[in-house]
Image 1 (cartoon, chains in turn orange, cyan):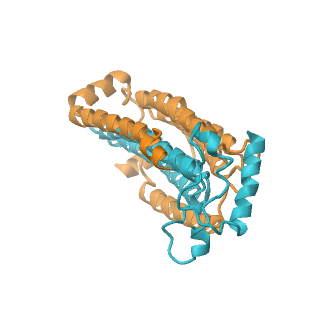
Image 2 (image 1 turned 120 degrees about the horizontal axis):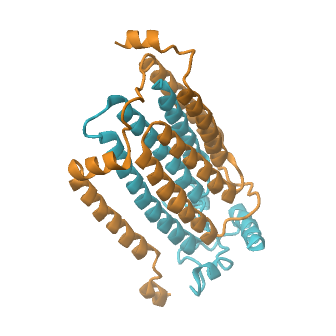
Image 3 (image 1 turned 45 degrees about the vertical axis):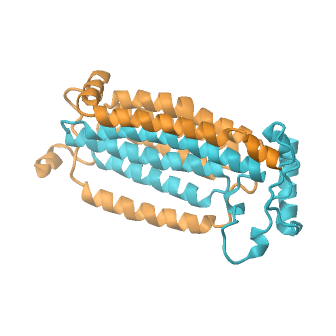
Length: 185
Length: 155
């Protein structure tokens, strides 16, 4: 079956969705690389917005519509804002900070390049003749997502809400000023 | 669409995040890199869900759960980083060496500049940690003084 698919869908004749995916993927990857290499801390957070927004577009291209909007709402809307608040509360320098990278960055680069080479090799070798069928009804509209979430995944969903509550309480407890240690000093 | 496109993109994004986690010094930048890695996993989950046409939509459900857990993780992580900054006056992860064995010179030099970081804690008194070593005057101390002055200037 995969051979038949390989005959009908050539690797050298990409469809429009593939070209769009490739272009947005290049932008996303570039923004991610700038995020981990820039010396200006606030710019890193803003480039992370570009990377996460590009990933939302990739979800849309993969017909996972609901996930894409959740990505925009949660990541771009709240996580980045939290990170910016964190940067400001720890009084990150606004301009270029020469010590943004630690001393072991070349070791880190070696590890990352080796991992990337191994992963890309394995993945390309494994899925050389595999195609996603994007035609037909969309896989991730809000209706489909709601049905599957509240029909098959209700219990994990509720457990997740308990986890979020615990995380919220934990964050408040951690960031509260402690009176007793204050008096002890 | 060829499945290799999202799979390769996810692998490359994951390795970018891996580099960031290993190479960054500021704790908040490390958290950003962790977000990149989690997002690479999410892209994989969505792509394989669309490919497999699973009746339970397990990939997309797990993606939603991962996003929620990542939000919880970033909240707790930032609370911890702020707490460390308030107690230490620095959020550089390679200065947090109290548990390191061996070179006591580095371990005994937590930043002695928190006089400048006290106002960050809004009336938290003198922000010097109680375990501050008396010999905080080696190169670590002066280096930290320089960065602290820069932070002052930037603020």
